[in-house]
Image 1 (tube, helix red, strand yellow):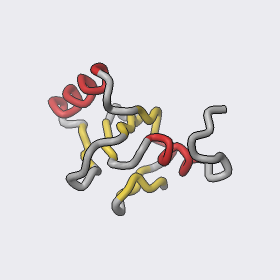
Image 2: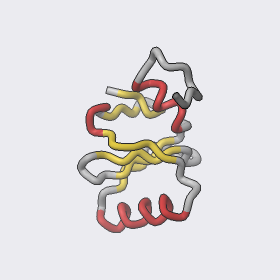
Image 3: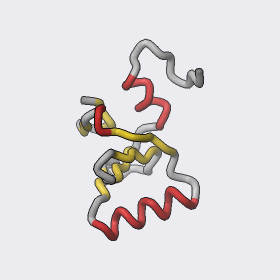
Image 4: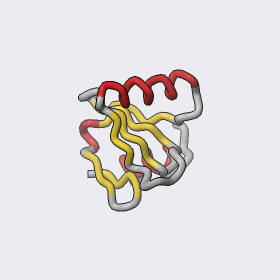
Length: 83
């Protein structure tokens, strides 16, 4: 299990990608997931900083930066590392 902020946890094995929400395609993805009933808002009312896509096509919104969440998947890798 991986913490995505504010006491919310997700199964690490189900996450396909972690993306930033600023681009237009990600906004459309969020909107489509909401219409399909597959949007999970785990921001606790805060600004969305990352979008997690799962293998079941659920979209999870988090208030934690994508780099921070990615670092939680591999604790040995420093945050912000791109290699």
